Image (cartoon, rainbow, N blue to C red; front, top):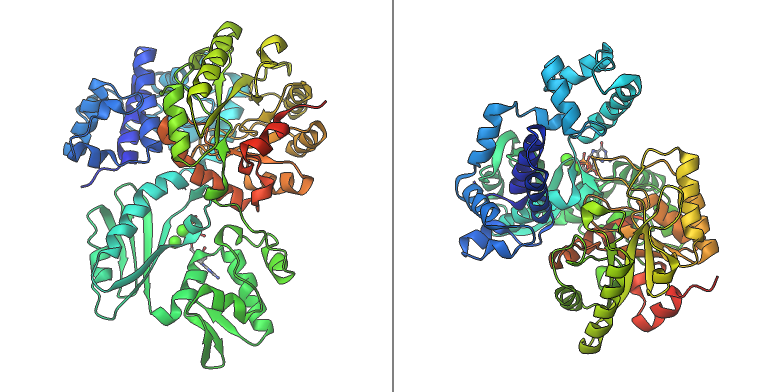
Length: 574
Ligand code: DGT
Ligand code: CA
Ligand code: CA
């Protein structure tokens, strides 16, 4: 069974969890977490690297020991160390750690005191109010766990887009190699670039005698075939991701692609437009009476109801049909429009590569500039910089810029916004930077009023340029903090500063609806990689997907500006 990066990442994550419950050394735990992160975000397949005998220790956070474990997993599908941990602790226990508010310490108590090691047992204990009397828990914690359980129930079965891509893209590529196959498209929420997908919907066109459906059901990563027919089949992969596949005739391709791309709400609205014109629209085509009048291309389906083509990311029935009808569809931003990146880390804080390596990777993306924005001193776990260290980096960047051609490093900082809204570094050093990226990394639980005031105050700071990952959410792991985002957007307008759309797969933060709100208010968004290694620039495509879902056009995005256009925009005038 071929092993994907995400499979190895999941194993390392689980090892980290179990080690943490066993009170293992924090550095050891962190090493596994970092390795898991590297693998989740890696743009290269490690299995292929192993097969080619490439040096795994060159990957960020992968030492000799982890490299051996990766090889072991690729070659055997197992990790002896995890098997050993499973003998010591129930495997379901790691699920509990995904509940916000439940750290390893608490999970350990739940396990030892109440013998809780599954989600169901936890749910029952919450319902019977058995949690609050445990040492270190209390009534408030019990309520918080109850709320978290409700949120978790809605998110467990969905896959982050970047993870789904790791399974969907190789499968689609493999299907394309089967004889008689013409087109293979991943449709559904995946094509709409939704931040998480429930399942994968694959649409195939093939010649009459193509064995594609039989082959699909024999894909070697399948755990279970749910249904198998000549034109439609559903399977569950070993990763637990469900895949639905349909084979359609070429004359139905556009209609089927439109149907299976969704969203359902968008489809229903389009079908209604058809009905108004006496047309029947389904996955086989557009029909007037018995006659097929369109359906070979998606364009023809839209044309039949008098509309131009609507990009998949907009198809949520959130105003795109009205916009299409009145010729106001946005010309959506594309990856190639980006001219630089305004949020990245190097070895100086918690990144893995040197300034020079980061600069050259950014240049290979076709960028003119890259802002280096290390963490600030408050964030000790990420080796945040103090004023002296930052001053040293400023000098280093100045010297490096003299050598570099075609790419410029901008001097920045990802400065912590402290609980009182002050910034974690003094003005005397902030004034020497090209930009100041402010970020909330603590006290996520503050009330809406306090959290909003905290951020607004930080934005009032004369050197504040850009608010990083504005909602603080981590997909399926941490809810956004409670904050009045519209006030923040208006403040950005008033102060002449910007909001980030952080492209890390687990963040994708700013949310699409707020991208749209920022656009309406005339606030520019910066789509940033938040790269911690040279490989992380690959994530920008997911950020652009999210931006497209937020209706953003090139002109709404700060880092589509050339360096020359950008520089005056970074200068604070008030
Ligand atoms: P997901 O998988 O939950 O992330 O979301 P989708 O949008 O991929 O939904 P899925 O996989 O259930 O169905 C794929 C597409 O098929 C969906 O986007 C629209 C279409 N579809 C499914 N059920 C219906 C339906 O009852 N009516 C219409 N008009 N379209 C449907
Ligand atoms: Ca789907
Ligand atoms: Ca589906």
